[in-house]
Image (cartoon, rainbow, N blue to C red; front, side, top):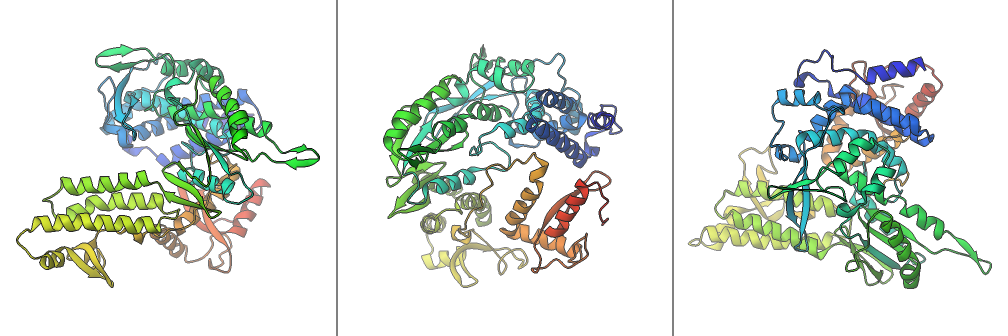
Amino acid sequence: MKEEKQMNTQVCASTCTSTSDWSSINWDLCRQYVNKLQARIVKAQKENRPGKVKSLQWILVHSFYAKALAVKQVTSNKGKRTSGTDKQRWISPLSKWKAIFMLKRRGYTPFPLRRIHIKKSNGKLRPLGIPTMKDRAMQALYLMSLAPVSECMADTDSYGFRKERGVWDAVEQCFKVLSKPCFAQWILEGDIKGCFDHISHEWILSHIPMDKIILGKWLKCGFLFQNRIYPTDEGTPQGGIISPTLANMALDGLEKELAVKFKTRSIKGKDHCFKVNLVRYADDFIITGESRELLEEQVKPIVSKFLKERGLELSEEKTRITHIDEGFEFLGFRLQKHKGKLIINPSKDKVKKFLADIKLVIKKNPSCRQDYLINLLNPKIRGWANYSQYCCASRTFDNADNQIYLKLRKWSCRRHPNKKKSWVFNKYYHCINGRKWNFSYWNGNKAKGLDGYSTLRHLTDTKVSKYLKIKREANPYDKEWAPYFDKRETYKMLQHLHGRNKLLTLWQKQERKCPYCQEPIDRSHSWNIQRKETEDGKMRILLVHDSCRRSQDQRRRNNKPGLVD
């Protein structure tokens, strides 16, 4: 008990710290203490100790380290220059330093949200609520304490707005439950009408395990639109940092209800499986089933009842039941069976949107330099290629490359109307490493590009590969899963050249040896990366043998001293 109190005292470092300004904060030490407290929250939640969870959350939101990380988060993301209704922005180091001590629970009152509208893909407007910088930092602070709890309570097949999970984890889960002939063939495509805007405040306040007073103030703060303040009686605002987590927690529990209702049971002496599986990404979800009647008459009423308790309802326009042979679209991809084989392709609408974006960039820059245009297009091409590389996208990449080539050829010829096409092509296109018709320019230094040229990226340069899905039960805040996530990080690094170069640097820095056993790290023994804390609180990345790591973990559990590197 005394050791626990000492730990709490250390984590809850007061504002009377030796740090005198923003630039001298030890961010590694901040992350270290926050991660330790989050791991303790997960442990208490797994042991079903709500009182302990609440006390640890209180310690976390009142610690200097967590407040500093919250300010750093809201001042380093994309919205750092977007102000709220108070018109304040934290740009200078002094303002960031002062902001740390402004994050206090006592006397805190949030400002109304600044309401703006953005266009959706269907042409309609999506309302966004922009909080002030202080309110964003407070939400980021309390999210640090809520996220470990939400991970423990979340559905295993929920992949949206969760740490270490993404779109492709959801798509791969769809493949796993639909690919084989014996699997379900019918899909309920669910869409919730105004999910963020209509969640019941009463349900949130009674079921979300966090400070009810602070949460109630955020929900009832209202919004400012056209110089008029409007009240908020329902929903959680889109634009708030904590809103996605609140929406996720409101939708958690549907998977368990379906599993209890449609578990394998004996019918006429034979085991019968209903093949009901839920895959959800935020408010978009699909439910598989063995027949249309099962989804229409049994599954859909359960979903409607579940949502009604939370003040939500299904959109009748977008909710439909389809057969896998007809195909359906989910998260920007089309899943459809062809001759019994499930094929995943990029959605045609997403491809059109990408090409339209490329065309717009080219059209807006008719007279710019070639290198400037290449620098504008390469990030867009690279981003879309990386997003679509884990599906059957080879043919799509070929066609898109051809469309980009035609647009750039037209751009090149328009700049020189009095020149022959051969002259234009020789100026803007070059043969590099045996590949002709590369839209490129001479950069004057062979070290910077291929053969001294900086070239436009081709979509086909991105290798189409298989995605390694995350384990359903994996929790990034749980220390028991730390070896798994380190191994997963190693795998991700090996998939990209930048990651491989980083591993090579670590390997050479360690003289190609394991720091524990001093044996060579090579292909004869399995190895992975390991994050280790140094004496000054910094995180260090090491390459270690799997066997050495397991032995070190065993010694640590047995409270035995290990080898010192």
